[in-house]
Amino acid sequence: MEDEGIHSRIEQLVGEEHELYERAAEGGLTDTEHRRLDSIKVGLDQCWDLLRQRRALREAGYDPNAARVRDPDVVEGYEQ
Image (tube, rainbow, N blue to C red; front, top):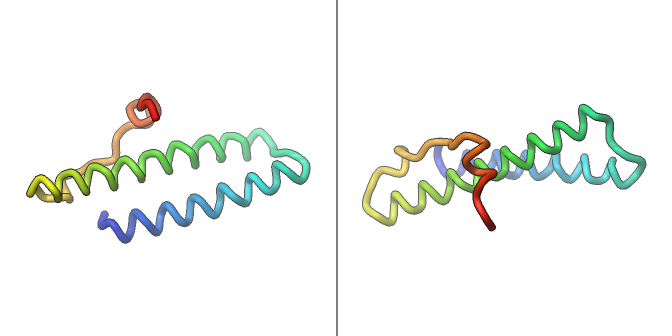
């Protein structure tokens, strides 16, 4: 996936995340919506990680297409 596609996916996920946060503020979320929000957070972390990998590969002179989406357990284990 190219950088533009990753950015588009991020925008899509952020939009959905905001909708769920608004619903939560207006009266709460269902269990399904809570699970979806958690899934969105992981998806965003994976997208940002993929962009960082692509940038690092590009800056090092390698093919950015060699970057791969990492497992949720990996990206969720990073310290901020």
